[in-house]
Figure 1 (cartoon, helix red, strand yellow):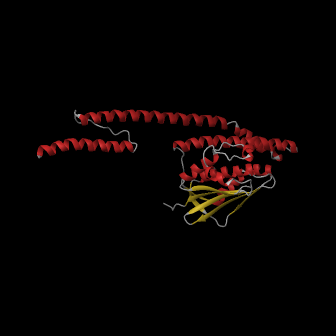
Figure 2 (figure 1 turned 90 degrees about the vertical axis):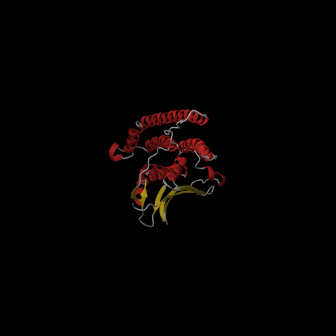
Length: 298
């Protein structure tokens, strides 16, 4: 009996240790070592398991290095692409102010507006590509600070001042109460800007109306961007946030787009613990909603 127990333990204990090692590796810990404590079949199994662990670890390190190099490359490229856009944007804004650069003719104003709107498109595209990559790699950073929602919305609207004036559309906000939220102010502003940009791009000139809202609902705040644009077909709602997806209409093809912006919005909102959705009817405009949970003060 004693010999049987000893033999059983000499078999079961190494197997249990090997099982614990396998569990840790399955959780992503590739630094744990599978030690061979004997020269029998179990020791041989442990040795083969260790060789497998080392190969996986080496492969994983190469993938991480590859992802890091890819991220650094994209960061460098986007930075170099963004650099010349800053003076172009600055001069466009200066040209639109007569007290700085003098008056312009109507034809000149339209030309400057076209330059400005295309610079904004290019800047947005560059930012979306970089953010999509960060979300895919799980490397986008998020803050958690308290801020006033009405001030955020006013700031977002102010960024679209020249674009709205160029298209002669109405951009309004309706806030029933003063609300505060503890989350990532910059990222929420980015989502609002993305949704607002899409609305501005699709609504008709001179007759376009966009409304931004933020309201409290129990344990969350719901933001919305409503427009009177062409709307989205019902069967396209489920795919609208899929990366590179585009609504197959002549209107979409006319306005272009990469299909990245809304997927970035979804990634940001979900990382902040919320969700995003759309309510729209073809020919009757669209309303994009996203919710952000309220966090108690720590």
